[in-house]
Length: 225
Image (cartoon, rainbow, N blue to C red; front, side, top):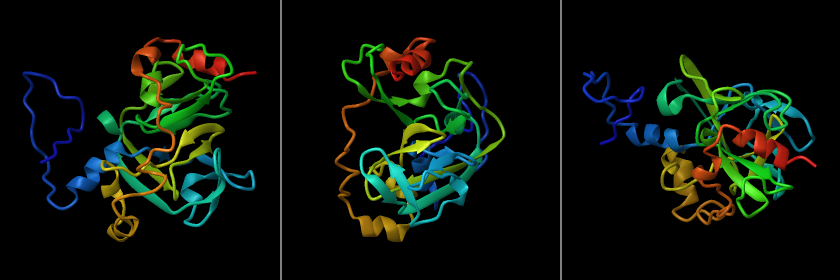
């Protein structure tokens, strides 16, 4: 049994159950764990073109950081209420040397290459969850209304470029696999090379290192020449 509240729960407050789903519960739970881009996000293609994510199709060639040009294997899309864990986060233009706003799901990880270790992470390559960069100003939660989310799946977990920022593609694991169409899930099997072996393991930055209002600014400066 999964309970997905539409907003944060508080003690001593009366709540009302508004829906029960016995057929797609696992898929909805998986959507919370998926990393997603919002409608309008421009993805860097193999040609250098910046294409809105909603215009991509399976088989399109996308530029990746580690493996060059890779074909899109599957594109997921859902529309949800932008509240609680489903509320997207906006990284304002210029915050991480991006020309325009980047709006993604809270647990989406960005790839940062530090030319100078300003965070004290002890390494130059980092994966940073967007939720840990929220400062209410240049990185803020966009709560309210509805949001269109898109997921991009490749044959392996990839770092791609969205609005010029290096960001991860969908990672298939025990939490997110349920969001896939059944036929694709069955075809991938239980062990998924490039996904279940976590090719980017060990790059995550712990939350305490980012628990400061200037974390995004430090990362911006650390990535500059």
